[in-house]
Image (cartoon, rainbow over all chains, first blue to last red; front, side):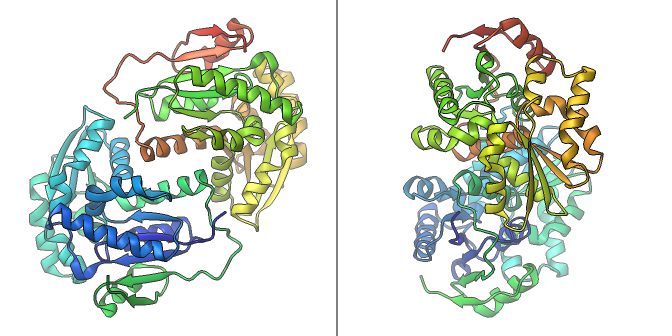
Length: 264
Length: 264
């Protein structure tokens, strides 16, 4: 048993999709979340800069005495997860391995699509992990640089969003039976993406897959939070505007959250 | 990537139910299995003796250069898992936490049954783990000392087996909506147990649940076996009669296995 919170980091609000899944699967766990919306999107930035920012988020979470850190951000996972995991003495989870593993289990044709930010796609990390696990797979990767800005500006219902998603995904149409949403922002666009890809394409939410792994690792390291404790205090921090973070969080999560601004 | 085999230990043939599940979920992984049928059942033995035998099995597996050890035996998990896990520098998995966790997710009424060997039930470990995770659960535990001998003697189809299962489970009838098969031998009696308990009782196979955790930990520790390698050589060892082990293994597993005798 370990009643300390689980720390989540993301470049902005996308990681809230992982927190929502956590609250569904493990409602007794407590959350500390830091979203670096002031510097989002991470995707187009150089790797060294992303690494520096990610370490700042990690150090912030460590000041909150978290028992585990979840990289609820594919870009940060691609660039910094292995290094951070190596250096910390608490478990550190990323979203890429769970997503890769789920995609291999899901595909029938062996043709897997992966969409993500420019950095995630340029790092080629999904293709590498998927082929490490299962060399006969064919991976079609596609950067979708316009998706994160749509989500961070909370325009996911707009007709512009639909048009952008439709145009962006055109190169994958008919080519894959499984599509990895390789960015935690993308589940917020899930309905539009499913419409564009068609009902027979299985969408893999790397964040939701990650939560299944969180559950197993809480068991393995024996650091579950007792379900006996009621006074959960989730804490959400943003480096940018509180109001717009809160608007997205409140519409997305099953609880109303308190958001604080933090300068890193 | 780590192409070494996964080691499985059990007091006898029961752990083959876990291996079968592994071969279904992770068919590219290689297995080394040791079953201590010469000294089965472990259930009625004193804890110190079980601990000593378990360490002998662990040391044997370490000589086979395994990358992970799975306690495919509830009794050994109850008595020695924490100690072994603490001492080794490779991941060591037991079956009790995965089974407990799955039972909590499955139950609707909050009334969970657990059946196991006398030692597993006397250790109270399932009740403890389930209540640690979810204090409001009610756990009905029942020792079924006659089940392992039925399986080890391969009499699972006999009418005697049906009578014993029926009589043994009578105290749980109508009291639980979820029943943990808290011994890896019991899935071999699954059909009879399901008939006796009724179709609405969800049976939790602690071994199958454990394999889901194996998959996550292979990912987390980055020790999956490459799917590119074809020359898998599963190795099965028994401390007792080769022929009777092989008969059960061949009927239970999807592959024909080579079995060697070993003296510990």
